[in-house]
Length: 414
Image (tube, rainbow, N blue to C red; front, side, top):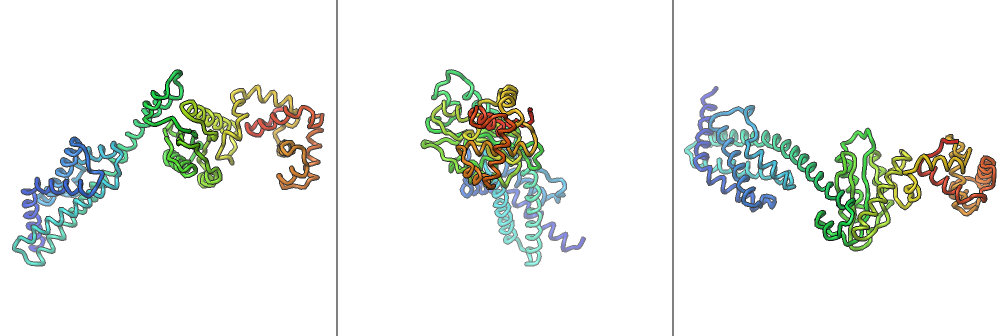
């Protein structure tokens, strides 16, 4: 080790000792600066005391490192700083604000060291060398502690969110299920007004999704917000499912094309919507029941290409889905051979369904299906041949059976 480096180390230790002597004032000055510059640092007295302890412990650790030549390998997050990071996470304050404080504190400490160096009788080279060493070591300390703080913050945030979500989910379930609950009590339980209109959605991820479910579910909630222009009340029902309500004084409007477009970018996401908004406590419950039925239909049909299911599109199937075996047996009696599970028969069912919806117009049905009118004519006659009677006979039952087959994936029984 050269005499010059020894001299620099001695200067750094001298600066550290002088800083240590003024540590109380530096801590007060630094915490006051945090409160003034960063809104998230304006705490109540208890948390403010923890902030001061966190600041003091970091300053003391840096000063000890400089004065005693402590290796960075031995540096860990001071306990008070770790606890403050946890409290920051519990209060829902941003990690960015916490990290900004560390960088501002680093700058203030280095500037204080520069001022101290300026008061010493040093050559320019010695002062610059000492300043560089102080800045470098302080920066490396901050980097190392920040890395630990990020892990502490994120772990606590996840734990706190899970606990908060569980409590909120329990309250929501109580509001949904408790008979005789009045509006005022329900609003108090949820800490939100239920007097307006409500539109519920269920957001879930397909099993085997390669992306983290929590991130996907947050994305789904953001999509719902964008498609309604409102921030939803969202709770975690389980690790793969979120429940969400859009509430407003006016009837919420859902931009279905926008929601579908965004969902197309996320193949693992599914959303079922109770898309007929309803008012008040009864409406809060009814729109959720609609969303539940829409989801049950979606899961039962297991259509890999259908990411968005609106209750209005599957309302009948939603009423029947809890009686699947009976519905399948009845549809089999009505449709007979048209229930076979092959491509040709599926095409016949689709054509007949469109034809009946087009009020028996071959031309209209052909235009909807983008095929020639003669193709529709042939398929309709073929279906009637399989049924053993014209479509005009028992028409309502045929339409309902075709609809439930399409929406519940019931093909296969003969």
